[in-house]
Amino acid sequence: MNSQDTDALHLALVETLGADCVSLDASVADAHAGDWSDAPRMRPRMTLLPRTPEDVARALRVLGKHRQPVVVQGGLTGLAGGATPQVGEVALSLARVNAIESFDRIGGTLTVQAGVPLEQLQTFVEAEGWFFPLDLGARGTCQIGGNAATNAGGNRVIRFGTMRELILGLEVALSDGTMLSMMNRVTKNTTGVDLKQLFIGSEGTLGVITRVVLKLEPKPSAVNTALCAVATFDDATRLLKSMRARLPGLSSFELMWRDFMNAATDIAHLKAPFGESYPVYVLIETLGESDEDDRRVLEQALERMLDEGIVQDVIVAQTIEHAKQLWAYRETVGELLSKLKPHAAFDIGISMDRMDGFVEDVRTALSERFPHQTHLFFGHLGDGNLHLLSGPYADAADLHRVEELIYAAVGDARGCISAEHGIGVIKEPFLHYSRSEPEIELMKKLKTLLDPIGILNVGRVMM
Ligand code: FAD
Image 1: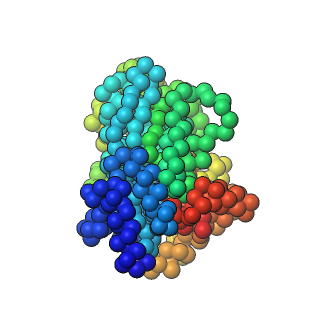
Image 2: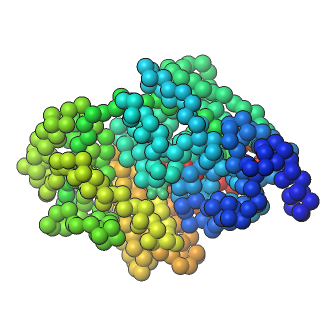
């Protein structure tokens, strides 16, 4: 595109949004040059910072007229490169589209604009006696629109489900500027095709999410946390089965293999949790109504596991501060991601009956083929979601080789190549390991139907 085209586009966008919402500034472009993944950073051609959902739709109308490719950006914490600009793209940031619009304090629903950061929303509803259960390490920066676009999961899926289960309604701006309002506020709605589901998890390829209606839960008044040491993966699965049966408030069941725990204690200078090192650690959280009663039930359930030899050792947090210390091991992920850059960060889905064998096979293959890299395994066991962080890879070809190795193994195990971070640009070449040819063809048809000019997040998820 020549400079005349740039000038014409810039002028049209300034006329539509106002000069303060359209930036050609290099430092602004730098801040919008990439997400948390290792996809190569690239400055966008222009950065748009609209202030309202309606402005988002107007901006898209102008971009469509100019056939200008655009990348949608939320909090930029994505790990799949979906929000990282590609050559010549304009960045459309939702950061200022961030009002909390209405709150049904009786029904427990909240209507927000897409750019509200997750943690701000959690804090807001908790002050009113309600609770939004989605929780993840990037909570301070990721936005609710980004969470919806990636169908984010996180630490409490075992009890409350992924973002898909937490959304009642959605508003989406399509690439031609049409505003599609699907702002349903009730749990039961049987009025034809549930169109909002098309946009949840489609990573901005079909439309820009501008407003979201969220389903809230009553705020739990008791949180209990325990860290268990177990000897084998099989014991962890037995523990999960037993905890599911005995603890109705079970809200997290996080697995960390020994290598992850060692790296976590090392990087964050944390004291090792137990006197001895164990093959697998499990972090358990329950949410309920009575601190003492819930803790007693948790302690009794874990004592039984100790007696049966399923758990080798256990720490039950006695205070909120103590619980935070136990979560600190699992929350080192952000630091580990930074330390192992350039890394491959996998968020695969593997059925529980295959997970142990998968981990052992993959661990052996990785240590044979990439002996100089660190390979860390952890995951949300109850959801069949396994994370593997592997790096650093100075050579891009090695990075591709390790991705090929893991995704081919996932395909063989009939798993999915992404259980929560999405496909973005990084996993696009591997989508065929999880989705059949007819499925990918149908996704492409939907893309053409909803974005006929082909300007929105092109090259993400599928080519
Ligand atoms: P971005 O990174 O800005 O964008 C992600 C994708 O969504 C891109 O394709 C973008 O184009 C699209 N998008 C963003 N906003 C919109 C919108 N309004 N409309 C349409 N498309 C949009 N993820 C989990 O699921 N579970 C975890 O436990 C988890 N833990 C994490 C821990 C750390 C330390 C980090 C850095 C990341 C973690 N993530 C996790 C990944 C990430 O935080 C999530 O994918 C999050 O949902 C991304 O939100 P975001 O606003 O940052 O989106």
